[in-house]
Image (cartoon, rainbow, N blue to C red):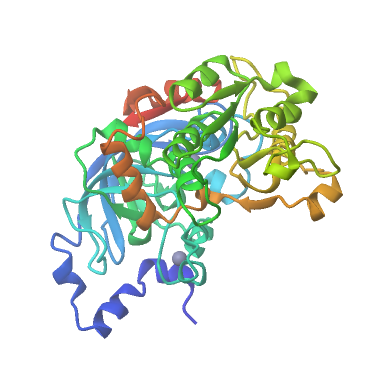
Length: 443
Ligand SMILES: [Zn+2]
Ligand SMILES: [Zn+2]
């Protein structure tokens, strides 16, 4: 049986192209092999501060289903901060000892494709998506590209060397992407062609894992629908939550309640579409009740279609909750939230959802959650585990780029730091201490 690792390297596309009598080569002009090209990349290896250093690298040949992308921009995702800055104790296992280029997304220009690649051509502008979409696995065939099974093939045995350091050490691309470099070497499954004249920073923002998840959760039907006129609560207003605020507005929500401990983030939420903001530190135990109050609307008459907070399961609440808080990777240098593990905001997000409503969770919390059991069993809340916000990369990312191009998505407001490749590390310090909304590295 063919392993998935082998499929990544050789692949189904060549077989498919042969079956329909089309030469993959004919669809993908350009050199199949680029040799000995020099480029710069941030290499993470070992433990502690200083594990990430800028290195001169030599590219290995591009083959099979590989795609070589000249990086234009990469989002500095909060979830990567520990690995990049060497915070926390845990870089054990083989991945910690491999020379890895971090960064699980980016945008750029295709410079070369392997002979089996059909999806993109040399010269295409592409999003290298944090979530792949192969189109042929069990999940992709059932409309859940957000769960594409290639997503799980990023372990040490799945990665392939893409370059060499000066001392001959083999270099690998984290997540088959490795955005923190002048060049990205990825596979066909991870690229989405986009046709736009947007600036590198704007495009890098809207194509980032966090914007795709926030917009995916609120403007895509894959997991749950934000209905026009509905009430949406967004718990956690980092770049993901603030993209969700924008998506909720685009989808026509009439009440958008943004919740975050950081004043600057609440102010920005109002600027990009929120109708109300709440500080969880000020509201304390009353946060859920406050959201229910804001959700009651002008009519609380049960005979007239109204909402009421009373009863065992509650009546009022948000029709749709986007949870995007998560655990702190370091104590923030701005206002800290009530729970550094992210568990409390997750539970509150569940509880503030209305009976019959939907909650999409997207965060990376630490620990286990406890919920009122009866609320969970018969409370009518539908939970969706929102990896990538349920977005389907090939279907949704071009749509999100359209929202950017038509002025419906405000990328500039969220990309509050834009830095060149050499200043990546200092920009990541701003990200981990939450003194910026997010940072985009341009190359
Ligand atoms: Zn990410
Ligand atoms: Zn798939």
